[in-house]
Amino acid sequence: MAFTEAERTDIRRFCGYPAYGAGNQGFQGWRFHQVYGLLEFRLGHLTGSEETTTRRYLASLAGLEQAIPASGENLDTDQAAVWTRNRDEIDDRVRLYDGWCRRLCGFLGIPPGPGLASRQPTLVV
Image (tube, rainbow, N blue to C red; front, side):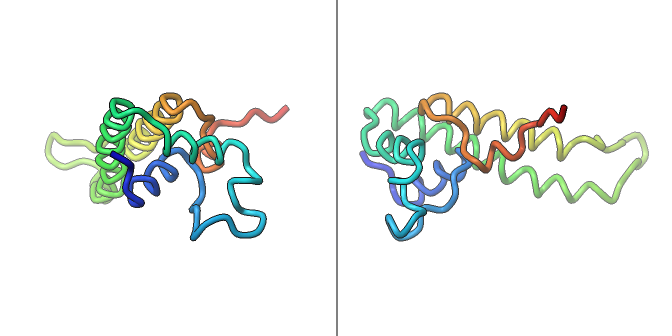
């Protein structure tokens, strides 16, 4: 069963690729970005079991993504009774989410898109 447009949008987003838009318009289309074209090809040609696995990734990633802004509710509490918040909770959740996004890219056989590349540590020499 083919992916819905919403699923395709989520896959692109989780893989770090920008919005596709209404189609191949101007210089932004997949024709000018080989990896984006490869992603679109893969999305249209996965086997049934590969689609099922990809949908499992989507479900996991949706939960991880939703947990990041929800963790902001604890930012105002540093210590309450015996509970002390994890000061790195948001960073930890973002790293976990990014790691799963990269795993989805690996499963689909594409490099992480620009949205994920910008969150990679860079080395300045």
